[in-house]
Image (cartoon, rainbow, N blue to C red; front, side, top):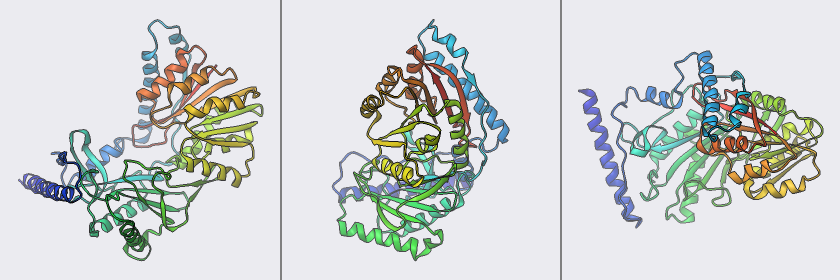
Length: 458
């Protein structure tokens, strides 16, 4: 009876919110296409919402950690089977895969509060409030989902939760609506929180400008700054506070500059005895303790020596290049995010690494020219650490056709993604590389995700 009443109450709130959104849409002369207001999943209530979220964000949280590692080991072997299934029938490459060694999963040194980066959404909560900050439970594709605060998520730092809570308080007092759909006329979007092991914390607020004038944007940015520096949010003790007025799904710093409202422009993280500068949109591993395990395993399997040149594709802020530099002849990194390249060059200088170079651009366009410049290098190890979508087939073609590349070490956080699998298959199917070894590293305890190091040898 109580649950039925609660569902009716929430759905009424959703309907009221839909009316508000449509009125706002008309006032901004947005496209006339109808807005789709999501429904609350029937199984989510005020009483069980946090447990439901835990099942989504940390689905293995009830399982002892040793059993989690065993599950991830079995999944790694499944990835080998997936690669095999994608090879041409009766190909002799199947026999080579039988020689691939699958190592035991290297555990994370920490299993709770290990995430140093979290991105929070703004949507309707179970009470129908459209300014709820958290994560989705339900099926977004079917418009049946709800936003739940991260109050009890065990892999998230308490400080990240505190910043999200204060952000929710702020936007609920704001005169501006939340932006659930670019056509709804709303403004408040995602919140990104980053932190370091030393406790430095950066918050980045994403705001849709819609048709606001620059003076209005700056007034709201100033209000946000005062809230987090002098008001209720000041207890979060932010190191950096950024504001980005972005009218696209994602905006680079070139498209919509990150406006520093308060504090330091960068965070500084320490990894394997080196210092790394982190910008708002730079890539950095989310589990710093497990990242040290990952990189040590990577260098051990890569077979590096003073004759080796490391080609670091999708190098981010230069972590792999800088950590490898003293082990090898030199390193060359390629990265498509301009600010990350700036950070990488700075990181090399600060760490007194002078045999590392970094180039801005997409790997598809930059790689061939970089390899031409490395024509005198006798032995190259290519390290790929792309996003979940992997790299394009042209990149793999270039690697296959460069005889100086003796090994390809592929680091993947989503090895069963079809695009990433196609990278593995393309390397194996070429006949020029064979998959010799896979080392799984548990970067993400309590989740199904596992970081894999795949060694391909020519």
